[in-house]
Image (cartoon, rainbow, N blue to C red; front, side):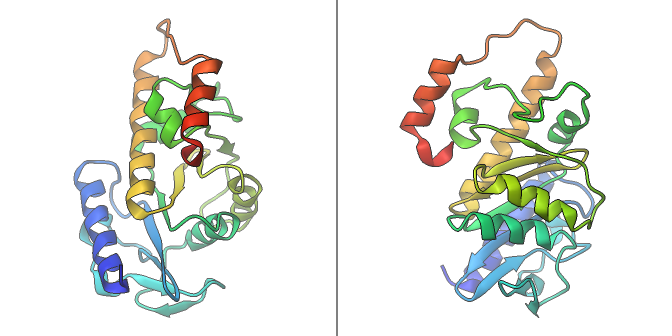
Length: 212
């Protein structure tokens, strides 16, 4: 896929995410590798109204090469790419149900969501929660780096999820599965549940190691 096609794909994904209520206002950002750097949605932009030609292009030192100024969370994406060379795309959202889980006092910071479905285990695996940092705080990049080499999906406390994938479609599918599971988890709070047991989780991870 050439760079222009990738720009169009980012804009199409952004519009789909926005129209389905997975992001709002100018929140969230999407990035993808290209042949000579990486593309990132611009700062202050709505994912529902992206202009492919104005999407930011950066080098691997995080410097702007062309396009509009990049999202102020560009360092978050760069940390994911540098720690996970297999990532070809990163999606970060402020999706409602995932953020809700990130502010609950009893959320397990080692693994924020239970293994409620097979597809959650296959696409997310485990979900550690990164401690809270103010938007734009460079310390967040360090916190992400400490976890990203072992996890392609992270939940930022009081902020939202960030997910890397081998393709833009894979990253989008995974973050949508995460949001759906967060919603299911919140719907089930207070109910007796039957999550997948350890042997079932282990079998899924054995069968689908690339997604765990």
